[in-house]
Length: 282
Ligand code: AMP
Image 1 (tube, protein in one colour):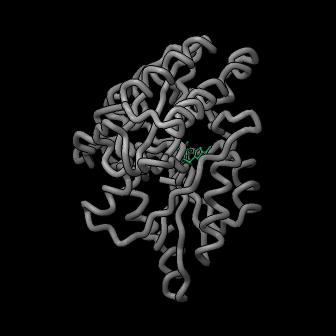
Image 2 (cartoon, helix red, strand yellow):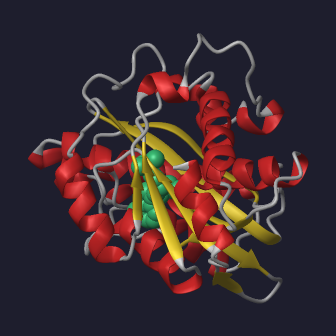
Image 3 (cartoon, protein in one colour):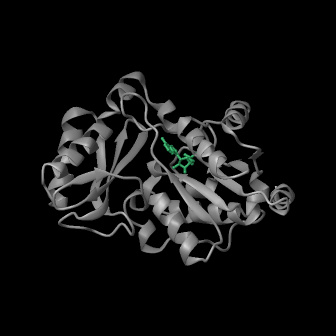
C-alpha cells in the first residue's frame, strides 16, 4: 500500500482515502465518487477495526463481503482497495493510543466507552500508511467527523478532510451496514428516527430556540411513534459539540436509539439565524 501511494504521489497524482469497515452501500459509494471527482487515485480501505467495538458489540457478526465491496468500489471510481490484515494493523497488543479527550466521551462516546479511541487510533494508522492528500468521512457519523477533523488539526496532519452528506433510503432511513440486522417490522419503523429530526428542524424553523425543549419534543416524538429506546437527543454546537442554548449558529441535532439489538444514530446539521434555519453539511 505504501509503495502504491508513494508511486502515485511521485507521479504527481493527488491521492484520496475513504476509510470503511466494508459491507459497502450507497453512503460509502457517494464518498468514493466525491473523492474520484477531486483526486486522481482513490484508495478505499476495508478494515473492521476491533478496537472500536465494545466487548458486547457486534464485531464477530459484522457483515463482510469483500468480493461485492471490490466490485462496488471499483465501479464508483476507486483505484486501490486496501484490505490490511489484523496483524498488520495491530502487530502488538496496542500500548499507545490516540485519545479523543472530552469530545469523545459524550454522546456516542458515553454509550460506547473507548469507541473513539479505537477510531482515532486506526484513522491515524491509515493516514500514516496511505498518506493521502484528502480523506473522506460521512456526516452520518457526525461526532466521528468532528473528532477526525480535530485529530487532523490538533496533530498537524497534512491532509484535507471531505465530509459527505448522509445518504438515505427513500423513506429517510440513513443507510448503514448495520441496517441489515433489522427485522422487517423494525426496518418499517426505523425511519421514525429521521422523521423526528426533521420535526425538530421544523420546530426551529417555526422559531423555537430552546435546546432542551427541542430535544424533548424530538425524543417524545420518537417514543410515541416507534418501539425504540432513545439513548439521547441533543442539540450541540457543530464545531466542538458544546452545549448551545438558545440554539444559534451552526448546530447539530443528534439522536441515538436502540431498535431491538440495533443501535441507530442520525443527525441533521443546521445553520440557525434569528429569522431563518437552513440545513447545511457539517
Ligand atoms: P463505516 O464503514 O460504517 O465505518 O463507514 C465508513 C464511512 O462511510 C464513514 O465515514 C461513515 O460516516 C460513512 N457513511 C456511513 N454511512 C453513510 C451514509 N448513509 N451516508 C454518508 N456516509 C456514510
